[in-house]
Figure 1 (spheres, rainbow, N blue to C red):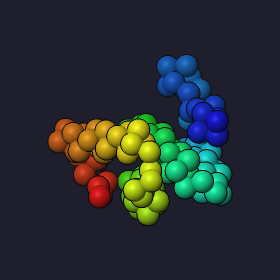
Figure 2: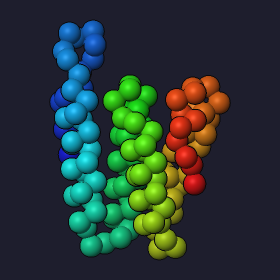
Figure 3: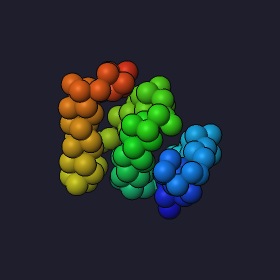
Length: 115
């Protein structure tokens, strides 16, 4: 839910609304802190992977830095384990595949260090 709130601060340029990168990043960092406080490591990892999707969305719109994505990738790598549900692992692999493919066409993605 906190990730969805980030969209309140990120409106379409056509609508004339301003984009507030700082507030977007604050929302996403709050989402990470909330997820990190969970006791169930499987749920925590699932939320980290879902937050990764939001990071990439904002990265493609120049609101998120590659450095922040790399930090999140390190956090996900730390939390992935053999008891991580297969659906979460598949989601993560598919998202990494998207980044790899994007690295072929968009030089900005080359700054993202994939595991």
